Image (cartoon, rainbow, N blue to C red; front, side, top):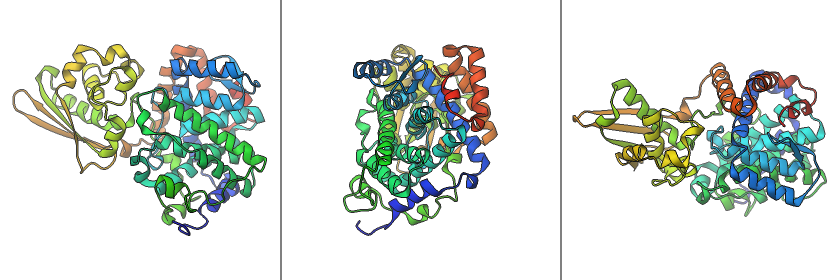
Amino acid sequence: MSGNGAGFTAKLASFIVNTNEQNIPEWAYEHAKVAFMDWLAVTFAGKDDPLVKILIDYVEMMGGKKQATIIGYNMKKDVSSAALINGAASHTLDYDDTLVSFFGHPSVTVFPSLLALSEWRGKSGKEFLTAYIIGLQVGGTIGACASLDHYMAGWHATSTLGHIASAAACARLLGLSEKQATYALGIGATQSSGLKRVFGTMCKPFHAGRSSQSGLLAALLAEKNFTSAEDIFEGPQGFFEALKGKVNEDVVSMLGLGWDIQNLNQKYHASCHATHSPLEAALSIIKKENIELDAIKSITVHSSTLALSAAGKTEPASGLEGKFCIPYCVANALLREETGMKAFTDEKVNDPAVRAIMKKINVINDPKMQALESLVEVETTNGKSFQAFSDILQQIPSLEVKKERVASKFLDLCEPVLGEKKSLAMKKKIETMDKLRNMKSMTRILL
């Protein structure tokens, strides 16, 4: 691997530091505001999860300066702890956005650190959004080079790439030099970890918070000229050699020319993204053919190795495990057509009615399926058979449709927590946040 993709780390550092915000298209900022609205919604919705309370108790025990807001708790903690807690809260429902090139969930690793840092250092809304767009692009670029091999080796890319995306975004926000940005990438990458083995436990959302926190730490240390390897990705025994992947020059050549933010895929089901195509395909058959649930003899779901590595649970015992179980997500969608937060409780997962439908569902690892797409076959008791195909990652709506759907999701998740008046006021502020002179005016309404 030595010598392969020479200068890759340096190119990333140059992109972080030298990208002129004037060269970022206006539509990218509109996408970024939609992404922030979606992230805030899932953070408010997830703030009362037991794992969040455990983290807050831990931080209370450790003490620290009051620098940044803990969303929805009317309290401030040090910037590092704020990134950890808000990041974990935003991923606890698994209802946050995904990006194909990232092989996971980018926003939950970048927004928490940027929000804490922006509040502490008094950064503007435009600076905040610019740093997010750049951090997201760095994460996607490294992910495209790491390739599917990285994810399939057992690494949770949300965490491993999240450490680096957060570091890149924070480096931009802090205005680091190229040398310092190089160090930030190295410090972030050497902390990169996170195993898929913990899916279905509190550790998965912890990965999001920890990666955001670690990236923030990387940038703050680099600001003080804390050193690291300057070829952390392409160098011998570096990120790619150790964690899989190699420099893809075609991908690198696109830095600054294309923007991954338009490919962000917001979720409208509160479960692992690998469950979305199967449930969408199954629902389409039942609705189109007007099939009664009692008339279903069997359902066969064709999924990929990738999808099953993320959502391969077959006997979920809890609401959290249900998020990573294709049979439950399909059965629940058919039975209730409620796929939001309320669908993933221990009671709902263990409901005999949904269990009866799950017994009719067979999930097959089909080599023809490569990513998160799925072919679903429904056989009825009268001998008829129907098929439908869905590829949720290729069904990304237009910006205008995203705005409408995310706004609806925002109000649906925030109104039970904040009330209608405050939720609407917050939504309006987000829609013009690129005009904010200081992000403190945003964080004041997040308490």
